[in-house]
Image (cartoon, rainbow, N blue to C red; front, side, top):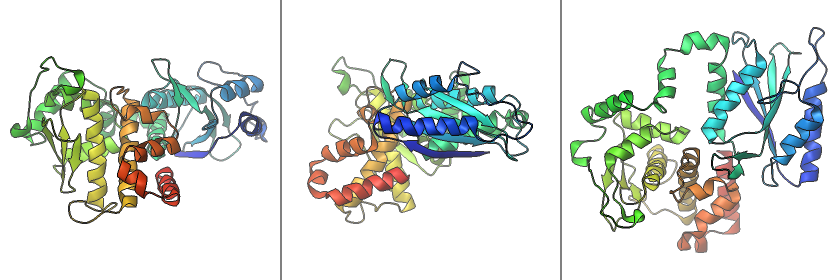
Length: 373
């Protein structure tokens, strides 16, 4: 299964509209094979959408920061797709659930090559369940997810993967009840959360931000969350015994910390949304330190540039997890709907030392590195 993001378009409405019309015309009218019937533009609800309607629909659901994405799904020859509109709708519905957004898109199937494929145009904005409109930003983990879901919806893959560990890995992140309880007990048995780390606290009636959460509740919420690429790597390291999460309730401690020695510290004090996103934030730091991507601050001096890059990576991953899971009480949630440049500016401004030390050139370098990821 080949999944390609063939580009995204930003900029003013008029210029973006011209590029959108050119692309829709290309995918609608490109030369067809002799045995290929007329091409239709379809979307989530219509099998035949006039080109003008598709153009207006996509253009109306985008802003200067992000107008639309161009995506291609191309199954291999042994990954049979019989009903292309149904296949495409299933994949895009999965992506919408992953992003936590109602997406606007249209598509056209090409069967004039050895590998039939579908061209998808995804509008730049999506709507949350609460009605808020935010950018539907796509990063590499989202394209990996698209590939997995596209493969899952082919006729070949269904029977082969239905009962495999991959299918179980997908469903375990969204299934509650006895299965989750069983996994939780298994975590205890294998040392995922040692008895000494199992705290159970209740609210003392103070302000919500001063509550101390139950570690049990945090674990259950984390394992029942929609997993991002980063949170899934954290899960894998915990399961392999390579990462220990220490929960603390100290009032004076920061949200959390990572030492790069296979452990992170996460404060249980505050809203559970914030505790969950902090787990991902510090987990990303630990992944980066362990892999050598960033220096270990406990062992060597770290430059302002490296600190800003590390914090940008961790906050971006934290924001993705908070946004997808609608963690509205996490400080990182506000970053999810921002453009990358606005989000990075907010991250650096929140730290006076970094704000004073990072030059404009360094800011651009950090932004480029984060965008490349």
